[in-house]
Amino acid sequence: MVFYFSVNAYTLSIETVTEKQVSQLVQRIAEQTETLCLQIVHDMEQLSTLPYVQIAFVEYQNTHRLNLLREKLDRFRNGRTLYERITLFTNHGRVLAANHMTEQTSPNQFVLGKNRSMAGVDDVFYKIFKENDQNHIAIFKRVYDFQEQHQPVGFVSVLIPLDHVVAFLERLEMGPDSEKLIVMETGEPVFSQNEFQRHEQVNDKKKEYAAQIPVMNWRILLRIPERELFKDVHQLVQRNLFFMFVVLLLAMGASFFFSRREIHPLTEIINGTREFAAGNLDHRIQTPSGIEVRRLSNAFNQMAKQLKERQLELIKSNKLAALGLLIAGIAHEIKNPLAGIKTTAQVMVEVLQLCPRHETQVNLDENDYYDIKGMAQDIGQEVNRLNKIVTDLLNFAKPRPSRITRCDMKEIVDDCLRILQKEIKNRKITISNEVRNCISMADRDQMVQVFINLLLNAISIVAPGTGIISLASFKNESTAPVIIIKDNGPGIPEEKVDHIFDPFFSMSGTGTGLGLSIVYTLLAQNNARIKVSSRVGNGTQFQLTFKEYHDREPGDG
View 1 (cartoon, rainbow, N blue to C red):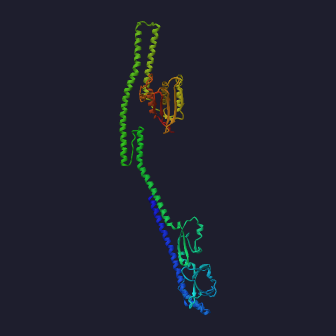
View 2 (cartoon, rainbow, N blue to C red):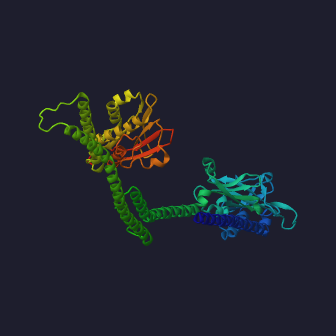
């Protein structure tokens, strides 16, 4: 902006100086033309008072005297090459004598009333006409009698090519499209050059400069197109604007280069913090330049390293805590079946002791028979219960590796609902399945296990006959697929929500408490997340966010 305004001020200054100089030039041309005209008037004054000119109108009537008069007029003209011809006229406009003429008559006769007087000069007037295809100006001065100074006897005239009078203006070079005019006080043109341009280029804005030639009552007009008058100025402005444009481009390029150079390390730091936030604490920020930025990146890397160490320590602590909880849970879950097996075995031993050892056939009454049979069935049920606990424990502790493939979650949900159809029908539960167009990358078998566990949880918690389980899908702001499983059960107390994924935590009293723990482990193994929200009396909602599907070859997890 400073550059633009400085150039603009400089341009206006040059334009002002240019206009002033052109005005002074036109005024000087007018003064030079005025001086030339006054010189002609002075010559006319001198010529009209010469004795041989005054006497010629009375005494030079024969050929010899007229020839002598012509010679004197030639001698007068010899030092004044401006004049083409000097002529003497009578009062009636008849040619009396002229230099360089062989005839006494001339077509240059004049009528006094049609000639124009010169301002400030007595008895001097002029007339403009064309002779031999060239414009001329004839200047006349009244001649008085040699003895009677108040008696006019005729006129003396000088014939001058008009180009000689307007030579100062004609020689002025202001460009091919400039107009040079000399007009009388009535507006009648005396001299015109390039006036046709005025009509051909109407839209070409022009500057007009004027000056007066008082002695002739003429007015000089100079019209110059602004593009021609300020051509150098405009070229200077264009060069400056081009220079400014180049400087601007260079500045923008340099600023872009240096900004990218400075912003790139910051971008690396931002990307690094995103990696840290996503859990990749092994990532390290690499910044090639900048002392301050390098120190900042080193601080972030050190922070990630310390967080990794703290995370490992926390994981170790959590493992120890989980191990203690797991051992307590195992002890609690296995203790009850073992106690039942032990009691049943003791009763069976007591019954069998009533029979002699040497008897090959035991005679039992009907009641004793059914009691022993029931005890044996109880032993089998308790053993099955122990087997289920051990199986779930193994699935929780060491699930098989995931085989990540392209999965259509709608098909998986539909298959799970078909598997649980009998349970749903028996409890008269309403299912609303709105899962649509939900493609993800996951292990299909493990996802079936996840959805069956979540659906069984919901089926067991809702009231028979009035229970409603709804499933829906959508894509979040990062286009990752999300599935919602919601029920209208009694809900989970707020203080227990954070513990539902803990091993052996169960609110039903009939399960092992490992179902949701297995769900959490399998989802983490498939790069998925689960979020639970629940309020007492308003049901429970599980939100599962899966990894977005990309069109590429699947790989094993």
